[in-house]
Image 1: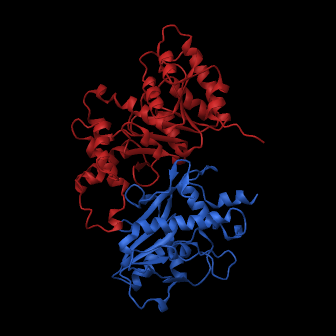
Image 2: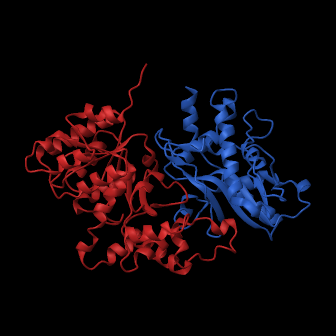
Length: 302
Length: 227
């Protein structure tokens, strides 16, 4: 369905991010919509934007509704990126089901950091895991990396917090809409990142709040891991259990041609099989920061 | 110079709409303003293709003759290409009017970059782009980034005058062209002056980028370059 395009002049054809967010939200409000179904729709029509598939009045109505919801949640300022227009990050296209639209708050330019890594791991890390996260972030910051994580409890929170406390830059890729915090205890950290760093969410606001069963939104968490790996040069897994969502990110990072580093300590845990499995698939076992540095920081000759 | 890292200068125009209008104080709900990218440089961090293009496009004239000067010409060309691609057939209807440089022609810092870009726009076969400096600035004003107190649109209206030698063919659709949309002050002033003279004309603002509110003033980059 290509609506109204023929008779429009260039100004009418220009992309309206507000209308696009409404159209995106409308596509998500259809039964059985998923990142896959939406990506499939777009793959059939090169150069399409969400409003090519949704009636204008419907898109406007969704846009107004979602805008009001975000304002009600106290979000004064936010933006969207639309594939095919503006400063959409092309590197996201390596994902299996690339996202067509995302929401953000804060310092967008961090997306274009010359060096960026995702530091991720379990929601329930050991004390050593937390200490390792902080040491790792400190070393990464010395090499001017932007620290990307998912604002979950545990390793994610430790990574963002260390980056902020040590004066670095950080990006949080949410598994919730901008208007929600998960865990709720991270609301303050989320606000801090929105104001001084960068917060990104691909999660549709209306679809998320309309779900009656809270667990039916859980699939958004691993989906954001796929975006996080696409956005960064590499993913570093500090500590993770056998069923951790972090492993989704490891799998997709490798598929996307991104490097995956697994801290040595994970290999020493006899209960874990995943470190070995992923090492066989191409992940890199690292004993210390220098092992990571060797792969990510080009050697300069003076 | 259209790429930086894995980003490229946006190829499709975006509208100022409900999401962004509030960032540009002097724009009104009925204004039709289009831009390609967001200028979002902060804290010495400027890596996107849009940020790089704007910084190169606005490089002050005092850098003429330095190694970095050629990037300005490249940015002007890239910008002209972006408009060429987007305006296409509409160039047969549009009159493109540059926002005059903030310095007068006699000033050593006078920078005609927007007009240079407009001259480089290519129209489809059979169409000659209608580029006219319809608005002249009669008195000097400090450049927006050099003045702590930015003058309101009314003050700009006072120094803008229609060049009556250029109005033989009455424009029906005017594109007011500038590199960076900041407060919308000069667009407002240009728009008001042009509407009074050509009440029937449609007016569209055309910008390379809009400045997001938190972005630092680009002049800070040039201060750094001076050191």
